[in-house]
Length: 363
Figure 1 (tube, rainbow, N blue to C red):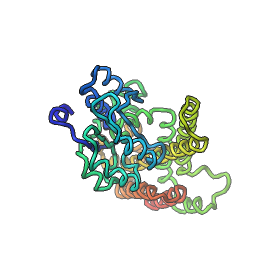
Figure 2: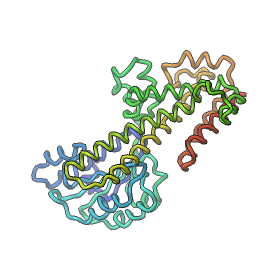
Figure 3: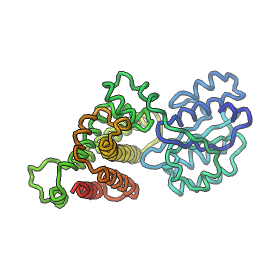
């Protein structure tokens, strides 16, 4: 960042790396430095830029309201706004968080701004999935790569959030994302993880025939809830909570004078809820895959690479007569379903089918 400022910053950057790798914090710090250049009070300019949300008029930070960035919001807040001269700084900085959530239409609309921005404009795109961006977008940005935080750094920020083993598990299951690790140690996160592990355990306990009956609706009314249903319920609960929170925040903004119709508020809240529901369901499936991965590790006697550190004894006891290849196959099936859900297939049908396919790996 210091080198970029000294040599002359690029007009566009692509901060790419896994979620929780510090992209947003780095973008905010970089924006603060850019906005401090030539400011009457550089320290105050930095202070305001570092606030979230920032009151600095020359910093625009765009987040997707729902599952995707809305094209009109992108046009209004970035593309058109980039033509206006700075209000008080020498620069204007536009940060687009979760840039992969831009549809092709939005990315194409942004292309001209990336190609020929005014000399006072700097754009920073943040993405955890750079492969989802058009090559025409990526090629016009200077890439900055971020690595996930190491496990010990995540553990240090979780101190006191749970038992030592539980913290160790959350740190490893978070893939370097501190926010995700904190979520896993919350009541909602613990419930999601419990649902994921219940599904993993059920694969070993249920026969393929039993799961076939459950999928086809032949199970008796007293049959226990399908494990995949517990996972879906947890995701729906998380999405509903975010939808309610978003709706209240937007209603408060409307009362304060921000022009939004009741329909706009309802639509934005639903989009935010859907996005969170999708994120949590994907995390739940990742936890299911992690359980099978750990079963394979335990079967191979590789306890040191197990993620579910607080379930070591259970993992060992579950692999008394192991077939590691079946566990690896289970991981592949779960990952295949995660990819299918990106294509907007029916979630219930996809999870039911996955449940049946997983059971077949244990025949």
